[in-house]
Image (cartoon, rainbow, N blue to C red; front, side, top):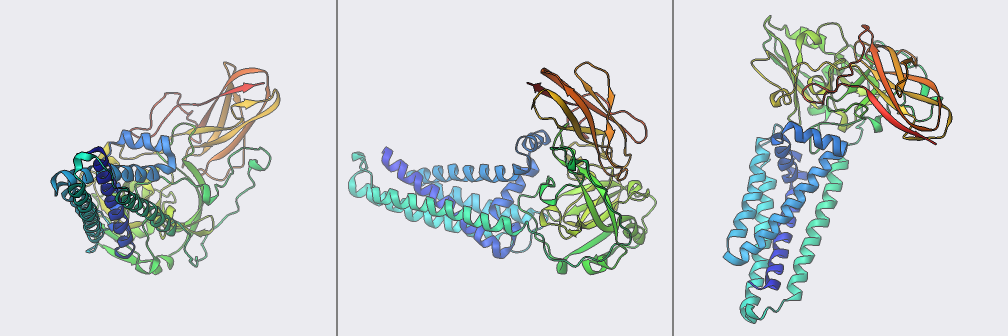
Length: 503
């Protein structure tokens, strides 16, 4: 095959693949987000990716890991489209088969997703059909021109090449536009009239008003971290939401959102952190949550004596295995409907999510909550525990140095940060500069054992390179360990150390 002909065929294959995906994404607007080819394949990739690779993605890309995944999928589709174009030119059928398998395969994968419906296969089928039609028409024109001009002369047809390039542009730009419409549409804060909670409190002023760069005592909602397995945010509304409570219970039942709102509401200040948050990392946040105590819901179901865990399931296919004794030990585990006095945003679990103080999110903070199944650890495993992570996931004592930064002018300075040991509280934070003695920092206001604590220490910074180390002591008197452990299998350990150049 002449080089010019191969390029034109590849361009038409690329155009066919992108236009097909565009058609599938547009179809998913009407058939539901679970049918989206990009989301179906993305969710499948997330499910089969080894935990170590997922941890690398989170540590490398943070909350942009899903966007990176979508870009990788788009590039892979483009590459396969190019190959399909070349193969179709050679054989007359292989490229169409390849694109058909990709489209139909994405539809089949969509039907296997937790939130699938009877229409989930449609977007993939439409993507396959459109891609094949575009490919056959474009490659048909390439073949016809080859035969008319004799391919051995290697004479390119600019008009046909440019038409294929236009198809690539339409597919790529159209896909970007549709994605730009679909994704933001799912991340807003829906309107909801919140009932008044039974109990509330006033959050004290934070030290951030006096120390520049210190993490605020309450995390702004727009800055609250998001780590989950959802390629696109599930779109659930209050009028069709319900929570199923089943499993090893004597009284299984289902409640609607209106019934949930009618139950006694509480407000609690709680710090959440992700098990994948590295030492000194950003995936931790604190705010005020409003919701219904899970204990009230579970007791109404009357659990059997053999129950060991509550397997909570979300609309994105995620599940968490929370020990039943934790849910019933008096801590304020809740089904939250609001944060910081406002309804949950869609990215943070609207309309309802699970929240369990003292546990990492992977075992106690299911977003887009739909089901609570009471069972044993042998009977069922959750999403991450089934992939080698620990069953219980208690939050480890940790502290983070926020200020100073990596460079500083000599003179009077302040070392400051936050520390947390959720459900045990923080009783002390100590700081060491280089190999000097541990110095006790001044703690900020106490909000509760479930909330982090700000701290600071004045420092006379002298010129040179210095290492600042911080450690915390929890409310039980146990000092944070200096043993270095990675995030697998149940959260990292070690001291946060910051190197500072003082000029």
